[in-house]
Amino acid sequence: MLVVFDLDGTLIDSSRSILESHKAAWKSVNAKCPPKEKILQLTGLPLIDIMQKLGPEYDPSSLAKVYSQTYMEATRHEKLFDGITELLANNFRAAVATGKSQRGADRVIKHFGFEGRFEIILGGNSVPNPKPNPDLLFSIMESTGTKDLIMVGDTTYDLEMANAAGVRGVGVSWGHHPSELLREWAPVVNSVEELKQHLRV
Image 1 (spheres, rainbow, N blue to C red):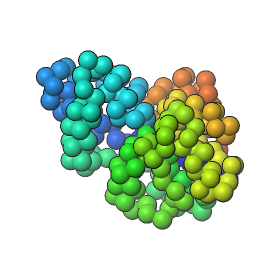
Image 2: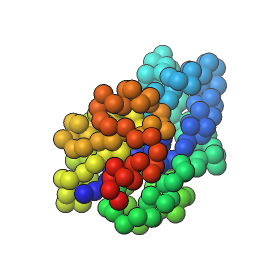
Image 3: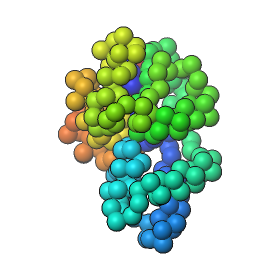
Image 4: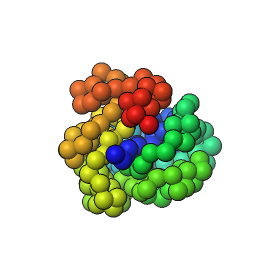
């Protein structure tokens, strides 16, 4: 079995970094920043898509550029959720499938010292169709030679992707989407210890 993890809201608490970067992006076009709840609801999708959904009247590329520039500084607020280091210290096969860009995903993995821990790390822009499409998981299957995957994520996009790829999913309650939405797609765990038991690692 290969366990595929999302990053933001699953392994990494990046809410503050995300919200600060959004504030800067919307300020750059003299617009009011959308509500926190709306931003976090869309987190997990590609950045361009998020900007289009939040402000269709604005140029999503310009917003995304300011967001990305700000995020490089805001990364100082990123931290691992409690128990993640201990979870990943266990000997099991693992990969990453995230809505972050490939560059952003690689940066995060390096920042937290997880180089070499994952068999493959894929960002949303590394496949033709990102979450909730199944391309990321299909690409991981092809690269790792296994179809026995379980997708761990904090958003419905992660679990929809798992469903579309025909693999198991498990939701985590400490991320960006409420548990009641996640349960429509997959079982939900409320702690890293519970996740460890669910994965049997």
